Image (cartoon, rainbow, N blue to C red):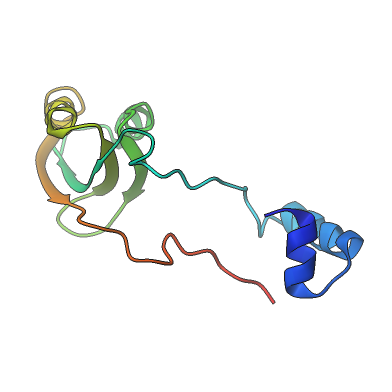
Length: 132
């Protein structure tokens, strides 16, 4: 959204809006600006959630770095519970998901994975936080 559009939406001048955004960035409240990609239009028509449980001997720091390099992974979080990681994956076909699962197990030290296909994302998500 442009500064002009944001200013109109929150009923402030463009300069006041720019200044407020600058202060929010400097304070760290706004970490970054991002783009939400339509994965289907990018040729990645199959989306899934992959839960990953690592072998107890696996170095999680090296896994973190390796996950960042996996093209199909669009989001990754370290979580509590039986599985230590949850990955959101966007793939061109099931073969790419199969390759990803093989890589997670054979190269990254995953002991177990659980894959759930995403049928659709609800309207309004991913959600942005509105600050008044």
